[in-house]
Every structure is written in C-alpha cells, then in structure tokens.
Length: 371
Image 1 (tube, rainbow, N blue to C red):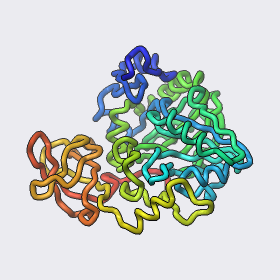
Image 2 (cartoon, helix red, strand yellow; image 1 turned 120 degrees about the horizontal axis):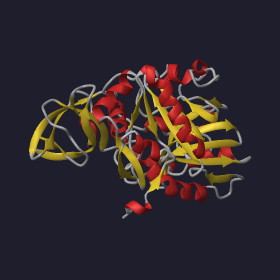
Image 3 (cartoon, rainbow, N blue to C red; image 1 turned 180 degrees about the horizontal axis):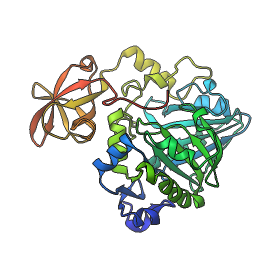
C-alpha cells in the first residue's frame, strides 16, 4: 500500500493547501478532494466556472513515420478520422476484449500524437503501449512528469480564458485543440472536459502550472470562479454518465457492455488489439449492460451496492452519489441487458433496505459542451 511519504504531488500542492483544500490520497497522489465543499463546488461549475488540477493524469507522446498505423492498432476507435488539431476518445483493449484504459488521442500531425490516460493507469498504459509498438517505426515516451494539466470548466470558462490569451478560443471546436500562449505559458488548449460543461483542458510544462493556476483564479474572480476538488469532479462526471476506470470500465468489462460500442470500429483499417474477442462478443450478444439509475426515494447509492429485482440481486452499482443538480441519488450500474431500457424499475440495496430506482436516459442533466 502506498504510504503518505511515497505519494506523488502535483505542482499545485502548495496552492491547494494555501486555498484550504482537504488533501487525500488518490491513485498514488496527494490530491484535493474539496475546497469550499462538494455541493458548492459542483454548482459553481454548473453555473459559473471552476478550475481543476488534473496534473495527476498521464501523458504519452507518440512520434514517428509509423505513428498513425501504430495508433490504429493500439486503440479501438478510428484514428484515420483525425485531422491535425483533432482529438479522439477511445479505449485500448486486451486480446480478450477487456479494457486496458480509456484515453484521449490528440493529433499534432500524421507523425506526432499525444495520449491522455488515467492517473492510476499511467505506468501500466505506458508499458502496454511500448509492448504494442513492436514492428512499428515509432517512439513512445512517457511525458507525464514534465507535463501538468489544468481544467477550466463552466459557462464562464471561455470569458475567463479570453482575458489571458490571444488565441481565438471561439474557433476551437469541441474535441479540437490549438497551441498558444496563456498568460505567458505555451499551452495545448483543448476544448474537452469531464464535466458536461463548456471549457478547456490546458497542458503545459509542470514548472509553470502553479503560476498559471494563480493567474486563472485571479482572472476568474469577477466571474465567480472557485478551485474544484476531486469530489465535485466525480459528481459532475457522474451526472453526465462518463465512465471512470476501475468502476464502469476495467479489464473485466468489455466496451460493448459499458455502452462504449460507439468507440469500437470493428471494420476500420488495420484492425486493433482485442478485435476478434469483441467481434465474438457482438455476435453472442451482451448479457449485462451499463445503465443509469435515478433513485426515486431518499437514499444515496454507492459503488458495489446490490441492484435488486423482486428482492433478488441482478446487478451492482459501479458509481453512485447524491446529485446536487437533481437533489436526488443517482447511479451507474450493470443490469440485465434485456431490462436496461429507460423506464425499467429496480431496487438498490441501501443500508439493508431496497430503495426504488428507475433506469433513465443519459445524461442525467443536459450537457452544455460546445456544439
């Protein structure tokens, strides 16, 4: 087990402590779980803007003449569809179809890409990426240590960032990025996020991150910005139904069960690792499917709580929380595939009692990402 002395720290750790952040261990890192409080921070992002430290996330650079062909093999989505400055959401799979990780693929040009992967999986993903590079003319490098990431999210995010950069932010479409200066730091400015709100993820040299974070918080003060911890990051992503590795997706879950069939291109050029297993799974049909559940009574579902039908366990909650936007308990979980449609009712066992819940469409609340 990782002890406090061995926890990694992001470049913003001093700022987090200065701002009163409650620091906890997360995926081997010392990270702020909250500042003002999860509900207040959550609503601030939905209504104004929030700044997240996501420097614990991993970044892997891929360069070389074989980069495109290599990435086609590595990930399930079709990298051929990317143009320069484009971003692709995908998963990597093992040969058996289980998920190595989900990730974002960013294309600088046909011979230069970078991947953003989950913090808890960075070392594993890098080793997997290196193994998969056999036979391709590519160089794969883990650049996580020298790269920081800040996420500015919320309806006022664009206005705030406009005060700090000459880059034409309105010209950056959803799942697109540009490179340019933000208050003196050269950044990758990516129109992506994990909240369902409009905003940006900024990648920059680690040593410049704390200074830029301070400038963003200062520039955002008139707009009501707040620093946001991992607690609200989780409630925000859960309201959108976004997957979290180790919960909705894992080596024991394949993407067709996890409602990620849209990122699996079985007929793309070159195939991909795990394709044969997923073809077989598709032909066989899934027996369980990830679904969104809204609790109809009082009660907050949590991971691993049992999902019941007529009193018998039929599934399990993967993520659950109190939704500040809906003022109700919400969950993601696996239920029988033939009873996964909106309107189906289940009970979730909360503190020994079966609490009524209904399958609902995702997202739980409307998305406001840039169209």
